[in-house]
Length: 289
Image 1 (cartoon, one colour):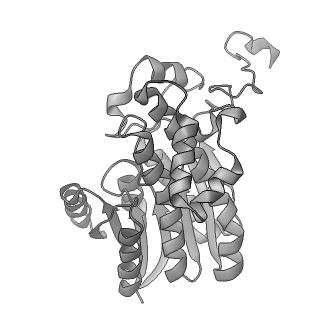
Image 2 (cartoon, helix red, strand yellow):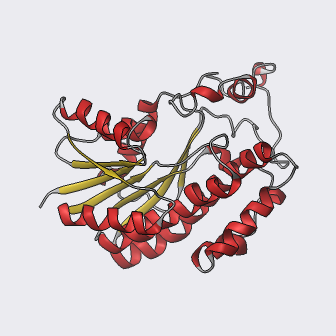
């Protein structure tokens, strides 16, 4: 039986790099909302000997995700799902970000849980999910509404992000909240998925990655964030792809229910709004180490 790997958001960025780094023995389904981008990526990689199949999918639509899961299962055994699809804080309203980044993670995990027996689900979150002070985050009760009352969940998430009259600012906050939710949801469904069906679930939280999506977002704010890393640069998509494919490999079979952060040390060095964290500036007092 064919071994199927599904990569959401596989047309560019981290998703494309993951698809290209996976062993060629897999049939890899790349998904996204823009068919032309998927087709160009597939043609490029198939010319190199990969087996890439394109399927359009809107992760904010459960029916679309269900159709993707069923079609993938009809092609063979789904052994890995790498969920990279998402949008940044500059790409939509607070509600749109909630539906794609947060509910999209729920839909992908739940619908593929139904068709998988064993295997791996990796949810790509973000170090932004660790940057807000605790009082700026929704409660776990609000997060849990995603499983019982989606309309109430969206309303509460949008309300929590509305910290100013400016939607652009609120959308940026919503992005951080949505990625915090993705980490929370991935962690909380891991036990059930492993216990009931042997599916290993974990998340990865990248920092700033140089992709087409982030090209327009490089500026003073990004430079400030990157100054909190000793490397003072963003990551290449291939660096995240290597981490993800390694963690999704069967040789990492004991890694489950956790988040692996790969952000050049920015959050660890104090970047963000977590009031409990104090930055230690190793650049000015390196002799103390």
